[in-house]
Image 1 (cartoon, rainbow, N blue to C red):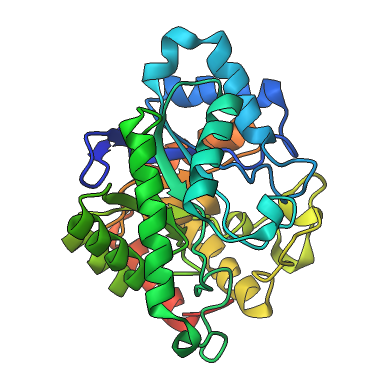
Image 2: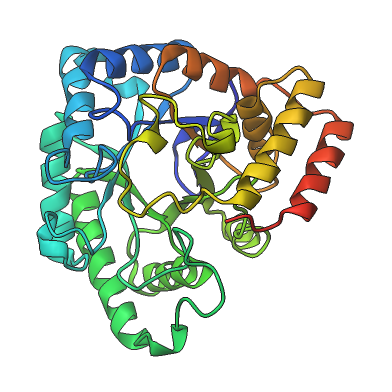
Length: 350
């Protein structure tokens, strides 16, 4: 297993991060325990969760994933130090979480305490903002004309960000949080947080996790360049594009128990004819090089310059083993050239 420094922190994290958002819907406590044990035995020390999980998000599943992780920690208290534990505060828009309101300083402090209670731990290694208060070009909102940046009150949002940093600072000083990070944000969001942190001597954001895969690479090159030069760890989430890059959803297939067989809050926005065509070509390339489609996609993602640790998820131990094996694979130059050809053919399939 390879380990990398998480931005400007003192945390050394595995190049694989175990995602947990299916724990509580598709996976139960026993499944979560098995996945944690397999991850640790494979050298993975980085686990990511969120107060919003499990997914698809609902009032009934809110906080369940943290609770399952907390149950494992409670039974393995002597192993807490083996895990770099990351969680997130939900942004606005979900009525069952703070009535759908913005992230505020008060919300940060309350949410940290609530996460600590569910996780049954005294500290969170990495506390992240799940998405910003302003609309950002994520979850398929990256197409021209979908957002109006000119309508955003820059000064107001900067003031909100300062308040959030001040609350995070109080959590860090209290020993509840070690480091802070972002999720689903942009270069402006990164740089404004860094500017405010330096100006006011507040916690520096050490990482950002955004969607990134063979089907969705809008962060290349501008946000990734920003991360490299500012030493902010880049953590791709959904490197299999919601599972579609495994090939299991080709030609409209919906395997029983799979994520796409469940009702989705934002719909199946990754389900397009162009996606199907691109995935079919990636599957052919994978077969040529004796890899599964998922392994091809994960190995490609891990090899992108600027990627620190890739967040993977699985609903079974066989899937998790398959995914972990991908990170032991260096793609041949010929495979990379073939992948590049498909990328150029289908640059924005959803």
